[in-house]
Image 1 (cartoon, helix red, strand yellow):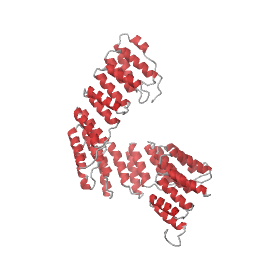
Image 2 (tube, one colour):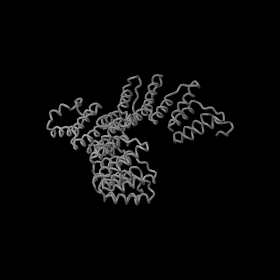
Image 3 (cartoon, rainbow, N blue to C red):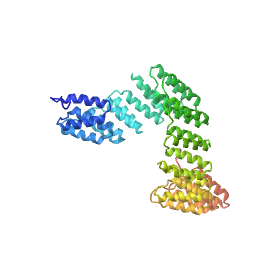
Image 4 (cartoon, helix red, strand yellow):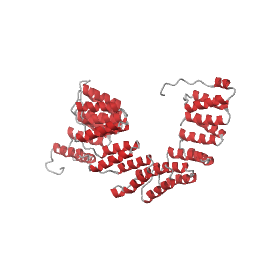
Length: 504
């Protein structure tokens, strides 16, 4: 087009750019705009809006604002499309506070938000866990509180219902579902799927079944996501009979299960101890057109380990390596847990070293599993060596890791070393302060060592640090008082903790 003589009008280029943007070829739009500029073809307001929208959809909202500056410099006023694109860009980058601020600014400047603007902001708020704020925006939208009454669409309701269900507010989601139908807005497959999923996780199975039937009766075809969501909820509840029935219905309706479907069912079988069924499903995946992925392998390995079938878990791990499936930190953590519980700490240490060969970086859970396993299998020198390695390589241990080590030291009778470790933790300027578990573990060690004064000292340290006692703390105090013949004197030495609010 640029080579044609005479050069086509900018409106012709806008039609092309608009078509490319609608088909999500955003990088092509940006590239073409640069070429247009280099040939002296100046963009108009529509061109700039298309360019701005492309930048925002590519998570480059900063460039979008630069284009907006260009619009203003040309003497044009940004319109609803401009602001909506920028709000979308901010939401995509999780800059939700700025998105809300820009929305308020556009209203203040007299630019009327459209239903797409509202839907974009509401979707962004719900996706980032700000459902309560999204509800307020919805209420302002339908009430016309600021003279901006706007009829919501299925996108607005879908985002809100999904957000409410994820927050466990299923009753409120049902209210909105009824409201949207009352407004004559027909729920789509996304809305039905979200609400059915919420009902399932809320244990309202009959309501979920009824809503599924309503969905089908209304001519809304459940899709792969719908079936996967319900199967996932059923499997997590151990309802494998119902999950299998839904799988059969899914296939009957012409919806092919995917890898996620099979992984979910395998996880459900492992949860209820039906490992043979999980294995059978795993072995049949390839024949059904779905090669097992790393998640499939992790599910089966975790199932084996939880059911103390560690040899089978290791064999599965070796097979996945042989087939070129790269293990993740989840794979290793599951295997390390299984090996440590089986008392195979040497194998666990070898496997920890093997992680580096596969370019997998251990995380805090990995070290906690190993440290806990070493302590519980009476390998205290090795546990101390691993702990010191963490500190030397500048890996900041978590409080859970410290608790594991202190617990192991106490059980091994190394109460002095445990106390030194606690003091080191208490004096750290940064990192993790001791929590109630730390105090309970150390107090338990001192109690078993008949050092009542140290138990009382630790209770005072708890009070000074505003660490609230729990049931285990109370149990230690009761044991202390019942064991000490001078319990009245001991009682007078105990600190006073603030009264806890109910439910805290």
